[in-house]
Length: 172
Image (cartoon, rainbow, N blue to C red; front, side):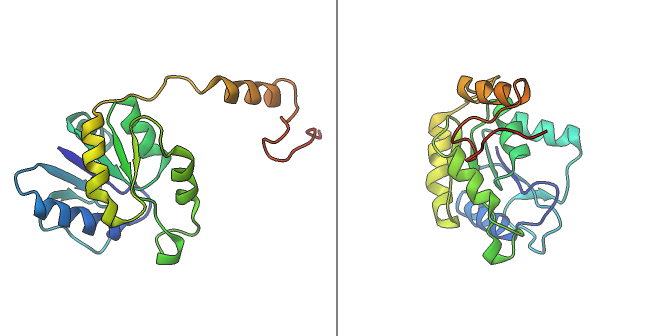
């Protein structure tokens, strides 16, 4: 099954519409979409506006691939279960979010195991195929060593690492 989720806060009709078109082109496949409060209602895939926590977890477990907005909750949920995820970032200029932080998120996550970025709707079919080919890939249970070292220095020693944010010493 392909599980489509727009997250719990904002509608994302562009993603839902694109995936409904993908479902129409793949009539033998199983799809479930959590569509939120958007105005578009899919005609070619099963959908619900919201899923309770247990139903969401069950959909993730049953999925082969997750297709989602670029929200960290979706990324972490898919990764924790070893499900590859295809991310389509919301765009501020299209009125999908207040800023383009989701584009920044995908720029940072692109190329990591199990994460596939579609910059626009036209790229979704190719990225879904790549995610399927990659198969299950869980997220690493810890952060990279370099990040942990910088975080430890900041929290424990009260200093910022050069280049991390252009920072100097932390003032107290």
